[in-house]
Image (cartoon, rainbow, N blue to C red):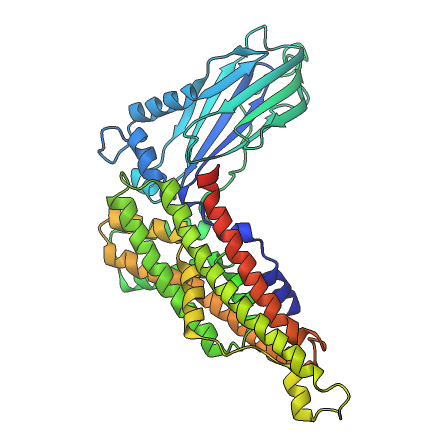
Length: 456
């Protein structure tokens, strides 16, 4: 139990955000003596997808043709810099894999393709070489990842890698030996590389259910149950207000009823935010910039938390000082009674207020999860809106259930610690103040993180 409390209280603040407005662009560079292969994987977020689809589906028929895919890859290549020994080399596209438009729009798709450069005599063979790669595709919303490896370590030895801080570029030093001169067979192609990310297996299974032609009662029950399970599992990932729940309930007179009420508020807020943001993504994407909307939601969430933290800090600091003065009156007098001693060992602050629960629940559910948004957008595209709303509610319910369980565990753990005296003599008075301070820091951190896109 104590381990759970420590984990909850120390969870990183920067994990409270969702990549709704980010365009992950992953590049794996595989070096061989006779060629270099760039394996590209693109992960567009929900709010980025409309802008990307304008480049992909140019005829707007909700289908990406081979010609459109090749045109997009050519545009991607134009945004790259690729050099061997300070000389630019042409890149040829291969293995194009573009998912359906509906899945791209829902932020649940991975675009994959390979770019290959055949090395001429000046670049291949034995000796030392250096490679430079830079990706400048859609920089306003991009999050870049780049890595390099040797296709055959017996023929290529990478001696140095130097990435920039954003990982949009890399300088690579390597030594190569010709496969023919080494007496070996030239490899047929780059090795398979494990996928860097994407949706979970449960999410993929739910997506397959969405495309089923018949919605039988059994199918509906399985889909709704899977949505609840996915929401619960998603709540265990970084963020989702677990730190806030811990910091608030530990330092207040929270009860099981308060924990359940908090979960209900999170469910309602999260469902409403998914619906609103989903409608904006579908109907007003050309007017709303994703790099403005998502950070804006994060700033609003952070301001709510900051307001709650400052108010708690102010009230609990006053209670802390009054407790100091009152405690000092016992010096030089007879020992306090058992009732008075118990009162001073457990001076928890005011009862939990409905306004605090609303503030905490709204801030925890305001920024929607990409998975829930994806479910809604796919079902809207399939003209199954009511089914989609049911799945979103089920997903949000599963997420809130985890928060409820965490809250109940925290409430019960406080009672258990009180009985065994686990706080020690000083902690009963310090804990409410410390928890208010943590809530304030969390709110400040969320606000700063939301402001970063506007500052940088």
